[in-house]
Length: 217
Image (cartoon, rainbow, N blue to C red; front, top):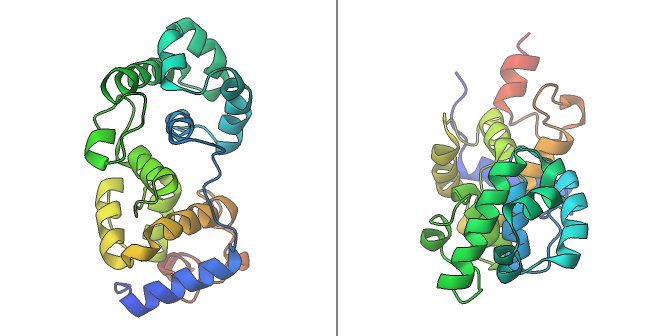
């Protein structure tokens, strides 16, 4: 059974991932914390590429909490229809925009505790907004971060939330945000869900999945 990675090994893995993904960053295009919040809500079960196509046009017309508060649900639905789950997302965006307008003076709150109270905002969305809009160290665990970190063996957890807390222990705080981007980039480009491209990976010597599922066959 593969052992848990040491702190030294975790650093080495992150350094090697930086070599292969030197430009790892948030791929949701945004100019303000509110735009990022809306984009992240839209990104649930939807690609960043699709979200960016939608928001590129939508944010030219509406890009403030007040603007979305003033729209009807039908109007928001029409704007985001191609993102999937659009009825649910439209409701969350309108409710969240209303709360930010009425209770936060139109400004997105900058603490985890306040963000997760907003409709449609869980720990993952809050982490994305905190780290990318407010420079607050965070590790947002989406499907890529969950899959890749557990495959490699940086952590061994059954849920995204447990994975988040385990990664926070395993990775130095000053590297949380960048590590989040590295793991996402690696998951999208190489360590794919159905068919990981192990032949193009530079961390196979550390990877539990490679050692047991590829080499072990």
